[in-house]
Picture (cartoon, rainbow, N blue to C red):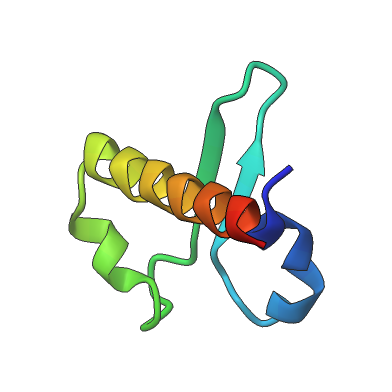
Length: 66
């Protein structure tokens, strides 16, 4: 599991949720009116997928360097 998914308790007021499905895919949801995440409203699914993939890559690199 990704480190940033484990830190869910730190984000209680955050409307962004990222859930990993059993098949390894991810479900990303957010409050469309949340000013912190409303920029996602204008992105395509492939663009959001790319953001998630980059976050995973970043997390994996951080874990391997510690």
